[in-house]
Amino acid sequence: MSDFEQSYLGRLRKLIGNRLVLMPGARCVIERDDGRVLLQLRGDMKVWGLPAGFCEADESVLTTLIREVAEETGLTILDPIPWGHASDPATNTLTYPNGDRIQGFGLEFVARRWDGALTADGEETLELDWFALDDLPEMLPAHRVTLEYFERYRETGQFQLF
Image 1 (cartoon, rainbow, N blue to C red):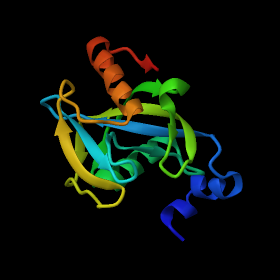
Image 2 (cartoon, rainbow, N blue to C red; image 1 turned 90 degrees about the horizontal axis):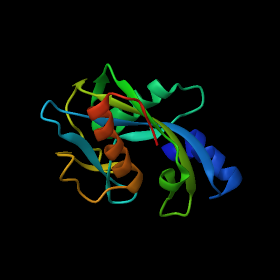
Image 3 (cartoon, rainbow, N blue to C red; image 1 turned 60 degrees about the vertical axis):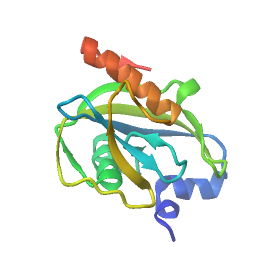
Image 4 (cartoon, rainbow, N blue to C red; image 1 turned 120 degrees about the horizontal axis):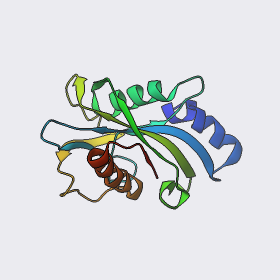
């Protein structure tokens, strides 16, 4: 049985097929001192995105964040700071290539300190690279919107709801 089939969402999908599921989760903007942010080239959609993922049963959003970042980047983030919450169905509803649909409700974090070395696993993450916010590659639309709101957060210091 694959990791996905064993996950909370994988077990749920066996019961409901590809119908819309509301999923809590977390995204992380990992920011270097020069303002560049870390993106991953995703294996499922072949576009760039932020390290992110959905909560498993009996898992806090902070535990989800730390686990997902480690799985997708090889980094252990230190002192993540919550800066926003994404839930707008217009930008946070996603249909995967296999037809599965989700609407994400994500707490957004920024991490500026970490341990470890960048590691792409070749499946979930095909590549990792640092990008300036004014020179982003093709991305998941929700993740691009996240970075637009992150810029507002950096300017204002205000928690962002989007």
